[in-house]
Length: 375
Image (tube, rainbow, N blue to C red; front, side, top):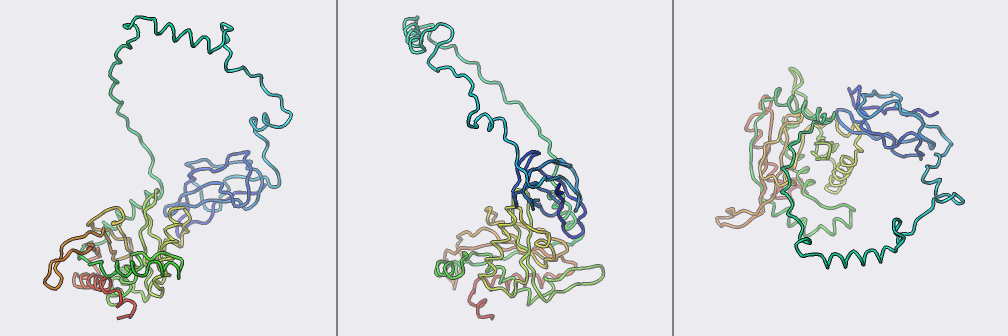
């Protein structure tokens, strides 16, 4: 028998919950088939089959707590699953059950067609009053129900971390707005060429990642965090990008964002988002971020105050792009505008640095050519 074991989890994670079995005892299993799904405090992992055979045992059931390396089931290799009763009935040479013709009327011996003709004649000859159906009573009011469901491990972890951020940091948020016209024009002009050259679409996130890298280089305290009585600084930018999934919000990390081109940033974000939504994130994808970006604009948010992702000290919030009247060179014009929000830990970051950082992001977005020229 081949043992089915829980894979290694994230750093400092010692247990998970078995969410569900994708195969049942007696099912055939092929190599790389998904057998079960487990959820830790940070991610959801799929357990896949390393060998083909038949699932013979499930030692754990959905909802049970499991540990890394624990055996949760057994596969018998080199055998095939037995045919189900339905399959056996359809096998060549199997006796078939007697059938009855649909047109036969079992109680009278007359054909169903003749019976239908007589019924229709009787209906037409009946008094009109008898044909009128009685009024139906109004339906009763729908029953008021409540449903109680246990929180998933991921949702519990999210709740714990958000409360931790609220309790431990002195969070403050500053706002600005950015004119997106230059980036929109750039995307419109080069979108098809960019896609053909790099095999990935040109979105807005890569511009904001690049803008954040530029601003973090100027104001490195926003890329640092407090550790006891020390402040830990980084000479690199590992930027977390918040991704919403049906299981909750996760923040996978784009490593070394400052060394990547726009195309590399777009590919990194697209791959992490795909893995997040398909449940393919690994523990290392979520660890070690130094700064974060979240985009509530994809859901229509016009303005919000994002919450810190501990132990990080700052997070940038993007929002929906809306056309608004603004003053440009003493003229009122219509521009595609976005509100930006920066939440920061005021224990470490002064208001001046936070505002200057956000202004630097604004300038980098409004003058995207400066990003390319490294100005």
